[in-house]
Amino acid sequence: MHYFSVEPDKSSAYTGSVDGSHKWLLPGVDSCPACQSTWGDNSRTYPSVDLTPVSSLADFVEARAEPIEEYERLCELVRPFLPPGALLKPGTSLGPLVGRAQGRFGPLAAPYPWWLLVQREALEKLQADGLRGLNGCPTQLRFRQRNAPELLELELLSAGRLHPDCLPGNREPRCTRCGRFGLSLPKNRLLDATTIPQHVDVFRLEDFSTVIVCTERFVNDCQRLGLDGVVFHPVPAA
Image 1 (cartoon, one colour):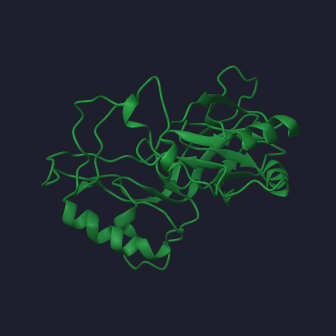
Image 2: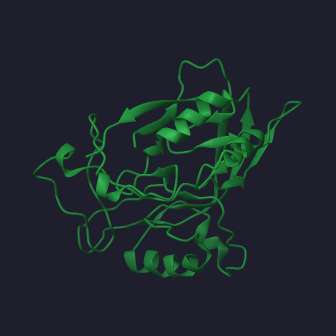
């Protein structure tokens, strides 16, 4: 099996853009007692999550950093609402994508490298072809134009990691308390074949959540069905 990264098509004639964020989020961590880091990363998103049953919703609205004990408390409030296999990290985004959108969108769109949007008709074609793990979640994007598309966000579970051979040899270990993995994304990437999921055709890397990876089958179906708006770059695995 061959694998590809899914990335925005900067040469596309599509003009679509999104100014928005997800409805809720976990705070970042302020001065982790284990690694002394203050950090958060909102590239990991779970748009299917509905937190309205949580009584303290105000705790999930403002982007901020909190002591790790408070972050961990809020994680436990969120955990019952997560999809199976979901991982939580500081700054994780939850709920539908809310905001404004404008312009012309392709069947697929990546307004940011870590978001993958799809028009409903395109999603139904891919699902009908038997592609696995495609959960399209409604967005709350407002258009000021006629004939606005119905954009869904694919919920991408974290799975798969980069191979140690493409990472610095003197890297610090992942923090055992807050989970921080303080490395920049390497330019030359190699997937660790032993960590690649076998039950989905598109997923988000566990260790570099800004990277979306898909199978060759996903690429072939998109090309055969004429579903453009993103580009695919081969990523070797070993």
